Length: 184
Image 1 (cartoon, rainbow, N blue to C red):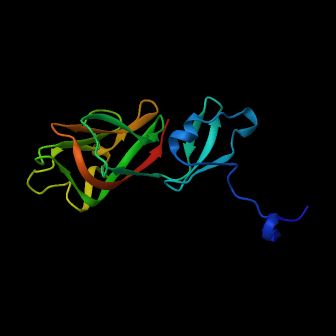
Image 2: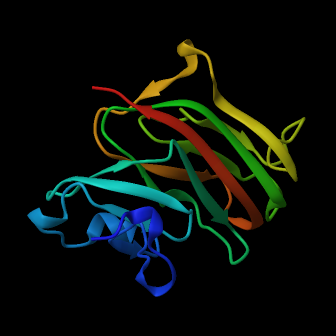
């Protein structure tokens, strides 16, 4: 058998055994015991995950989750679960986001908040019209700023959630980045 480093061309295989469009699709996939310890790739955020158990339990290989919030077609009031799960015992150490299209609502009175473990724990509910508007185009820091006192630990698999209040969103696009590590 040739050494892996000498394999070229069509004989070379991908590092992952499965590819999923989203994290939600990965978490919903059926897996078997023979898949445990294999790697999967999620194409929408470029992340890689190792299957730890068939329940399934996926552990991230990369420590930054990336997700897109797109209100181009509108997002109503209420809580919307997004397509990223921070695993049990994951500790979010840093959060930041890039607003590429300014958010709007009918009178700009709409508020947005982001959370994973508890209400307002990534970005506190803030009106679009607030002074120093954090929903205008630009780069912004979330609550997790790299200090231990601002970090949050998941007590189960947690889906990142957007909460919109007061008025539905009529426009806006952002990319949210969550750096995290796994603990026990």
